[in-house]
Length: 110
Length: 120
Image (cartoon, rainbow over all chains, first blue to last red; front, side, top):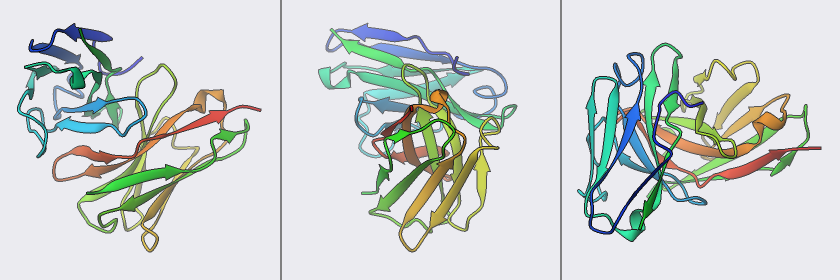
């Protein structure tokens, strides 16, 4: 049972926009920034979004992040087949004193 | 480009100590901006942060694992290591090393992970 809650799956057709949610509490998302990672099994996870909505250099602007209260979202616009991967949200938890992750969302491009 | 690579045994017997090493290339392990971390993912489950070490040797561990975890660093070899004692089947997981960037508050580089199975 992950501390941050994500839907286990999401899907969309090429070109569409997809949103992945991440729900937490006041001790994690409510009081700290959220990061998002993209993971293709067998490869190194890749940082997509940091500090809620910042993109590292090299990450396309099709990827965007937002946060409101104790929830955060990752949006992917102009969906491409190469976006098919697992996506994880993460934040620090002030009560547990650990970094916590969501359970991951498997994105399928139809 | 910073790269991290995990290495170590893929099979550990119950009650023994799991030992893994992460080798850093393409960047300095001694920069004050980074914390060198271990994260794991049991099969079919989510990611769990294990702990991190600063280049000077300061550590912080997940309280749920603290009694069994030791992370150390060898800056001359650009390596940091994980030891997890008294392992059980529940410690079977893919273990990742990662760099925590204190400026951006995130794990900005990860290794590709190594599967460690605890079994007799």
